[in-house]
Image (cartoon, rainbow, N blue to C red):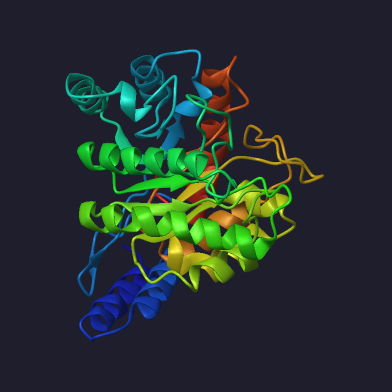
Amino acid sequence: MSKVKSELRFTLVQTIAKPIGPEARLILKIKLQECLNFRHFKLFIFFNGLKEKNMIFAYSTNAFVKFSIFESFEKIAALGFRGVEIMGDRPHLYPPDFQGAEMIRVKETLEKHNLKLTNINSFTLYAVGDMYLPSWIEPDKERRDIRIQHTTDCLKAAAALDCKNISIPPGGPMNNLSRKDAMALFHQGMDQVIPLAEELDVKILVEPEPDLLMENTAEFKSFIKDVKSPAVGLNFDIGHFFCAGEDPSVAFEELFQWIGHIHIEDIAEDRSHNHLIAGHGAIQFPDILKTIARSDYQDDISLELYPYVDTPEAAGRESLDYLRPIFEEAGLNIP
């Protein structure tokens, strides 16, 4: 080992012997990696009791709607992903279709393919509606109740599968509702599902999306300030914040305290909302992934490429090949 490396390691031992905060530990880790130029060197040490964590990079089954959920697991694992986000809707895990033995089969198949379940994506409701509807903010209470029941069912499914979070839509389209009235309806609906989320210890992650009730940083912060439960957080979709005209890196830093899961995809330079294979758009992945690394984010990230239903494997493979070296360069380890 060189003299420089030896001195840096000695400094590290001295430093971690003292009580330091998480920000200082993170800065130290980054500086060591930069100074030593250890692209493949892993710091298998404890920083005041905090061990470096591997991020699981998953692929959402919503790109595999032409296959069963079980076929999707097999194909995603074969591509080299170690995690999977499950579409909580038909043709995959629509909870009324999965009871007892079927849920056991889901869990056993995940274990067979060594896949971690990173999230249940409860956004769409094609089983009884479409991508957005029934919504949290529809005028008809019966329609809102369908969305509430679906969320309740997905929370129970997540608990049964040892998944720590589900993602939900932010309400919308708005149609002729005022923002004040729409937000009131959204809060009313959330109040009905939060107690179960707290009981099950499963987080409800709201996912801002273009043209819906919440689509940017300011709108999410306006919502979350009135939420008193730690069971509610944010599913941070990198592309969605780019579509909303924001720099995803800046948005991530501002919203970090609420983020429980990340979606990743590329978006075209015109910021139109169309998920693209990584590398086919204008998102600066080195910037956002370095921001994630600096934040000491401790959760997982899922590739979401639902437009590629005819070529989900090719789209996933190309995205993984493109992103893996960028993850590594940013200092994020994805096994």
